[in-house]
Image 1 (cartoon, rainbow, N blue to C red):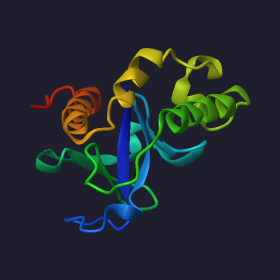
Image 2: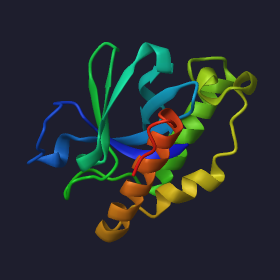
Image 3: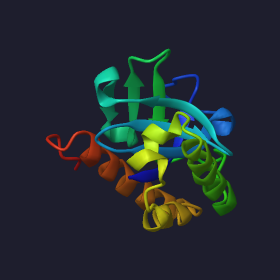
Length: 157
């Protein structure tokens, strides 16, 4: 599952100034959770056993704990938050694929000996998140999809 997400480095309950949120791409599978920003910077990458996730249902987000710090991610950006262009999303996925092909950390992200999974269809979900109304629907859909991948017994509603 590939989704746009926004990381709040300040881990705030309420975001009044969204300009310092970090826009990026979240890659979620049963074997790994990775958040990266353009062009190929991996903010974190962990196996499910290394982390605990607290789902923020009202905010359509999640807190990822158990790493060097706690990461608060949201799937619906507040108005004024940085956005990723189509090119930036493509560069991020391409950058991670290049790291994977050289045997780096992203090899675990994509699996299959470093070959990139076919994410073209999933990236389509990312491209429509540029108007507020579409972003709202897309954010809820991506929240549910990621939650269902990472916590299938706790179905997202």
